[in-house]
Length: 201
Image (cartoon, rainbow, N blue to C red; front, side, top):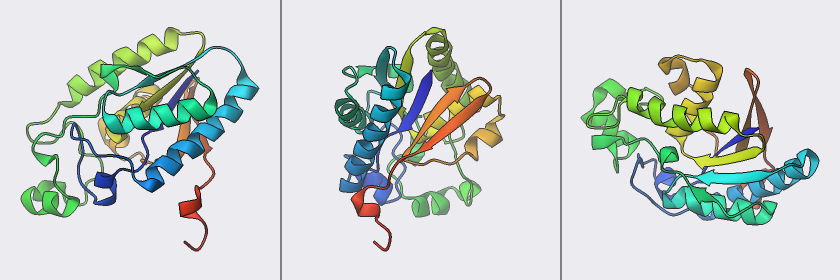
């Protein structure tokens, strides 16, 4: 069984900046999201049993998220898998969404520009590397948790469902959800809102 988790909110997320291969630390909300996901994983693990492992992107925000949730869920120490690194967004990295829209008007209103960014990673390269990870994970008999990024998580879900590139890019990008890949479908586990997301806050 494969579980996909996006890292918690970061400073760049809060500023609406393109991160890509750049990095920024988790915010207070991001840490709370990771803890909430860890608690939900602990409950899933208790019910499912079996062997578990955690794979994570090498980028700091994913590693921080993976470490938090692994500790809370009593999972093994996360292992780094370079194939889960975020998409290289080339010239867009570090720019706010508003700056992207001014400099690259072709992206105004476009959701999910992975594989299209000037100077960035191609869609073919992305799908080849994450497709390799997915194929190997499907051969495993235990439970594999992957902590990665918006572009990678969208593309992995798309590959699992057999979606085309446009449909992959249109998928949502939550930071407080666990996606479980099952035969031809994806189960979605909403995690309890952390205190900073309380109703009325």
